[in-house]
Image 1 (cartoon, helix red, strand yellow):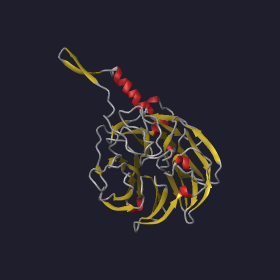
Image 2 (cartoon, rainbow, N blue to C red):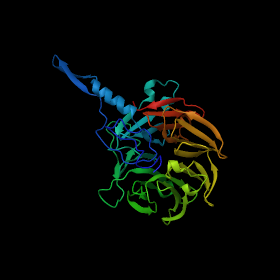
Image 3 (cartoon, helix red, strand yellow):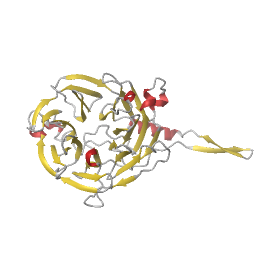
Image 4 (tube, rainbow, N blue to C red):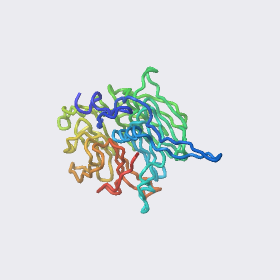
Length: 388
């Protein structure tokens, strides 16, 4: 297995501050205790009782510093109103940031810290997505829903939790990708069991499993003009599925195309996006633009580093992965710009294009650090939000 394969590249979880900071493949992390919170003490005199803050002991401060140092942010999602950003990390935490406060002309350093942080899963939060009312989060073998209207309140509880029907009760694979299908009011999810699962959001029932991949699924993309979904896997294929029938209608073995193949990196597909008849994907193979109908690679982007996230934006393609930069590509393959961020590797990009909050229209990027970089335009990083 080359760089990016499942055995080599999972960032270790809690209690393992020496873990790798780059993950080309998302495999199981080991789990430990939740990050410790600040303590408080009680003092009193004259019959009156009051609470006074107690500073954390030195060893606790050291542990917090190590957790921040080895934090990985896997996922992001913007609220329906466009004014808040959720980010999920390898400690099972979700932080909610106020974009409107951080972007205000009166913003202070406190404005760039979470409004609230809570533990959502026992293991890492691999994927986040938002509906009109809910924030959906995915961890090891479970999907949870949180009400955006309640999420800023302390002690917020999940509205529901669902577990896909796996072959064995002992099987707890990661759920690595969540994708909304608005036309059918359904949720598509995929990960370590090599299947795509479809869940009806109205009833919470799992309606279908799409089988065909032979290894771990990393990414999903919806073709909005037709009821089809694309999936990219560790097995080196991108598969196209008809959501009406549940049938696989096309398979592209990316690594078998000489112009895309990079055997030294492996064959895994770590990211993909689609726009009408076009698809862009990458991972072990080079980041490449494909014409779907003919299954033909049309543009190979000249970038050595494996990519972990890619998206179409206007007449550009944005990508990020191993390395600190957000890359901006022309469809012709020309590199328009590389904009550096604060993390040495990036795992997720989020474009806030909610029409309800045009003043919060930003690009955010996160990866193997405790920071979320905010780009107010594509040309430079304006500032960073921070879990700490």
